[in-house]
Image (cartoon, rainbow, N blue to C red; front, side, top):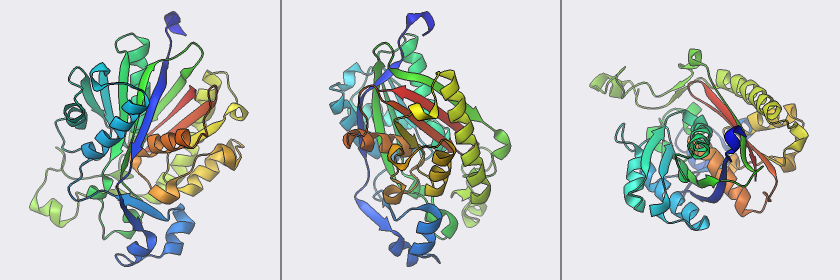
Amino acid sequence: MKSGRRSAGIAGTGFYVPDKILTNLDLEKIVDTTDEWIRTRTGIRERRIADVNEATSDLAVKAARKALEDARTCPQEIDLIIVATTSPDMLFPPTACFVQKNIGAEKSASFDVSAACSGFIYGLSIANAYIKNGDCGTVLLIGAEAISKIIDWQDRDTCVLFGDGAGAVVLRQSKYGSGILGNYLGADGSGTDLLKLPAGGSRLPASHETVRQRSHYIKMNGKQIYKFAIEAMTDAIIKVLEKTSLLPEDIDLFIPHQANVRIIESVAKNLNLPKEKVAVNVDRYGNTSAASIPIALCEAVKQGRIREGDIVVLAAFGAGLTWGVSVIRW
């Protein structure tokens, strides 16, 4: 590794999902859809929905405290907090600053990463760089979403897909030969119209007209996203494996972004990975955007599916269009 510096390793994990469960049968009462239609096309059976008074930072704080406890780390030891989210508490200040205040990490720098569903992977790459460069000793990285707040519950094409939750990891310098072995990030701005939240920014400020047109809710072209996701993740995984001198058969656990079970199965098939090497929880949580991978990672750790020395591959795609992969030796 460059200059003999060691990469970042995950020292602790924790996740939180709201108590409220919204099933496909519940959605049948809201929009023109069916449980069978949702399950066969997405693999989703239910998702978690934040309380009316729960913001993204509230979910992030609960996940963060669990990760800190798991890592036996106090908030005062944190040098940097990164929150990956597409549903921040506010456009500014950063959601990470709310987290910093509420967990008492007054010594940490804090900022958000906006890379949609790829945000956690982008955040891992940033955290790794800070730790490798010696600028930070301990980084708290959180993927958190209260995405139900920006869903159009009259749009059956999007409201069935998403859910709320947060996952967090504590990162420190790893042992030699372990930790983050490689990252691969990508973006294609020509796809900015495929998945977006049109209004509320400087391009289309809030107005009576934007509210009337329901422009403050997620808009998505699902068919084009589907094809892009399979190709982008497969290609990126192959490239980062080559970069780290590994092969698909070296993967012990593949943790993909939990958007659609058919996308996950297609990528796994392209890599010739058996089901037992693929983490899937989209059936229980839906697409939690930037929180999807850390929630699945935390569950896998809790279930004992990851052991010391295992090769774990995390891969995501999202609006932007963005995508990214991280390879970790546990």
